[in-house]
Image 1: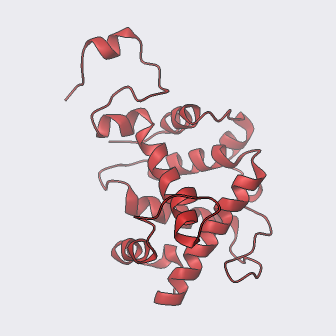
Image 2 (image 1 turned 120 degrees about the vertical axis):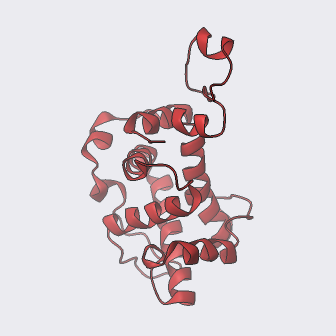
Length: 187
């Protein structure tokens, strides 16, 4: 199954985000994921916007089914639309990415994105991001769950392709017309 930019835009619409076409079409990472956010130790974060996006894509590699293609374009479009004109949300996401990288460096001497997929999965498990209650003001695992894991999962399953993946061809927020609910799910 292939995720597309259209899927990402549908997921953004489902989340109630009004997407400005300039940021989504230009893929301007410097504006979206740049800033002077601090890392978990309180010092300035040294990861560039492209590295932050690579970390987000590495998380998607763990939490998304392996049979999906087009993940990079989908995640880029969704993430850029999600942080556009939302400064505090962007800072929270950047902080969560930095926290995850710090955790991975502490236990595996490498950035999260540099680890193999099995180790990435174990880092998220060991951190507790798979079971933490998502909370933007909570501890490290709660913020990683809120800003990163839940965001990526919500984006996937609120998109038309992600909905098909789990048997709901017309997810909430995605208009499908009367034919979509009268014919039943396609298999």
